[in-house]
Length: 420
Image (cartoon, rainbow, N blue to C red; front, side, top):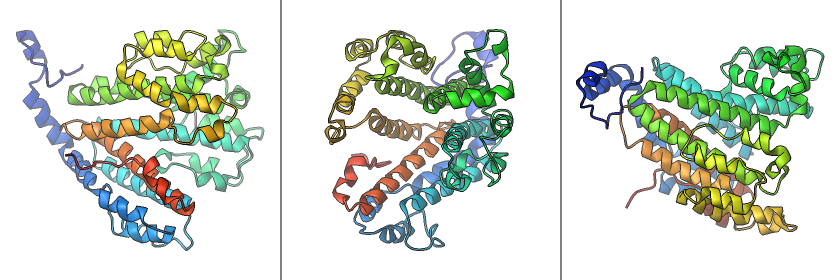
């Protein structure tokens, strides 16, 4: 049963008898999750500050960056890496450090926080599964794929798939993928539902269940990027429902963040569909299936965007009641117009994609989650902010390697900037 939001005061006696007082909710939160929340709030102090970024931006080599990071909360986590160090190595070790800290925090948790943190990991499980399938279909070596695995998305059974002897294209390859990835993991329900919808060649009775023998044929025929977007949508909807069931401040804070993320996903799908086949009537069903069924744009905004064909005029009309999203659309429109043009590669200079804008908006969103107490949103926000910090470090490292340090500020999003 959903507990009330803390900001709501019930005047009805029956409501007061049925729902625990706000003070009781806060007390129980501290009993069960107070220590774990204090740990993750303490980890907030480990984010790089403006002085750290200034020092890293002045580095001339990746070895200088290694030394610069030793003076931060990252410490000597790269001390065992031989020289010369690579950008990919820095990124991988940063993600491993994040995963270690995440697992430590999760080990201190009790239900329902443990399940909440499981949901955070499921997103990365989807990334890993799709990446492995894509790599296998492109005849990538398992050892090469292991370098790209997100450590937060590692789960039981992955080692057998990543072994040298595993052949995903063999007679039983996709059957094993189905058994390990699509049955024995928390993301199995998302894949199951996707495979049912993707298996459109079969009649309705046959689609009630997907046989493992058919999985290989389905996966090889599907656009894996569309598959990943569909799975992320299912995960997002499931995560939102779970947070709403928790109630209280968690439902309020996480509800807002996930609604914003759902809206950003709608904008992302829409912008990436413009000037492509997904904007046509023939692909309308595939595009519409990627829109989440909740958010601030839902249902009025998404209803307008579901219409075909998709064009700039229609998108502007659909977003007109949402001034913030309309402004975001106008800011990135030039990027996609340039990309569709004949000189798209050179025209994109100086423009920002919708992904760049969303990253910046999300940082502000996640920072604000720390302004309230007694909720699970800080665990989600901390994880997302750490991932953005790693993207910052990877960007700086790439600019150092390319000797284009004057562009560092263009692609970096500082976290917890001092407020004036």
